[in-house]
Image (tube, rainbow, N blue to C red; front, side, top):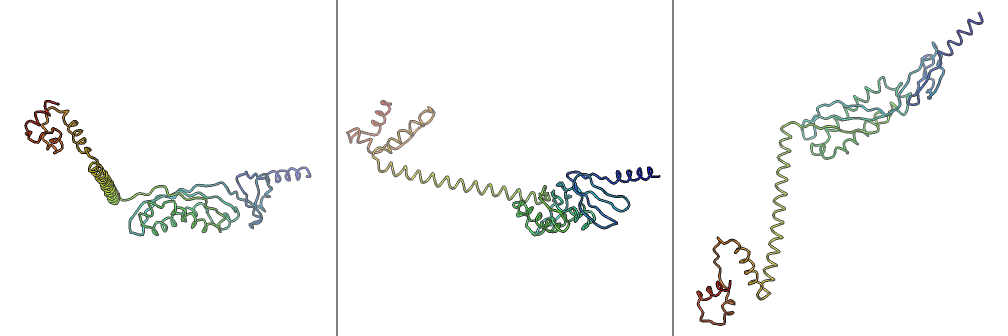
Length: 258
């Protein structure tokens, strides 16, 4: 009889040994009441009187399903996100909420719709990080009583209706045309300033205009098919030293010289 009792005791003792992994915590219940948190390693959980539940405390990712949301300026968008959280108090995650994974997912969906409805479409597209931080803060505060810490929320995709995509494309095209016109006008202003400066320099430097004229003639004379007609400055006539010389004589002399 004693041997039988010893064997039964050994069986009960062996069956009472429960292993909790390093990334887990155990919630021990004694006669239905919460007793303590079981740390990693071997723990004794006596059958009939006691039971326990394991909780994974590693960081988890929740894929918030894609859903429709309306922005503050009444634009319907489809948006989804991913949420990262971990459990800092295993007892609250079991005692304060029935299914913490489902609860976090539903809370994230509701909060995301509310956050999108509080901003305009432009703010949603340009301030995505700020909106993500706001959603993360709201969910983190709401899940503190559940022993859950929300680490980060990232908005993944923002899908716009086709009509709105065309409108945005037109706005972007108009903005590019505006920038092109501004750039061109700035270039024309700079060019006019440079031309005015060049004209002032030539006007104040004797012979500079003639040198520029000769340089221009040299550039366009490379094509033999061109016929050039230009006015000869009075200084050229004075260079011949004879005020009685005719225009034909000047042309003949220039032609012979060339």
